[in-house]
Length: 157
Image 1 (tube, helix red, strand yellow):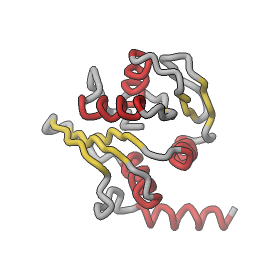
Image 2 (spheres, one colour):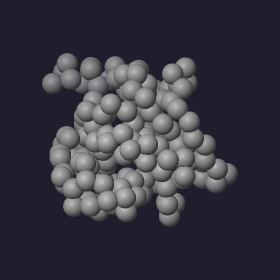
Image 3 (tube, rainbow, N blue to C red):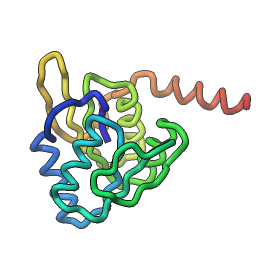
Image 4 (cartoon, rainbow, N blue to C red):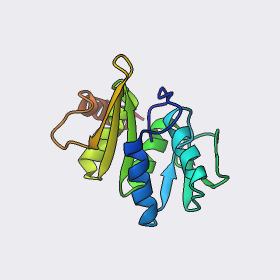
């Protein structure tokens, strides 16, 4: 999964290596379908002629480069992302400019202890860095507050 604002023409080499490792291990792939990073992931998987891919979507499927099986993981983006995270064993993420949606996903992955390889890209400097999710780092400083508010709203409903 990754930031929809990520507009590179191709995936960073550090990510293609991680994807290739996953493919060599015959891992199943769940990929999103929004513009940006997810489409780059899909295009790469199509070029690699991957078969064991599921495209996760919310309300409707917008992109499926390999005509793979598609699955609705929720009715909203938030629900879709949480359910895809729940279903995965590990993740490869592109995070651009500290995007709040991806930051929240990183917190969930971290708290669930799921191995996550992260490519963090800053538009202003045009630099990216790759590495494993840091269990000590705070990716979304508002995560606990957001969870509290969700529970509060749910209790009222």
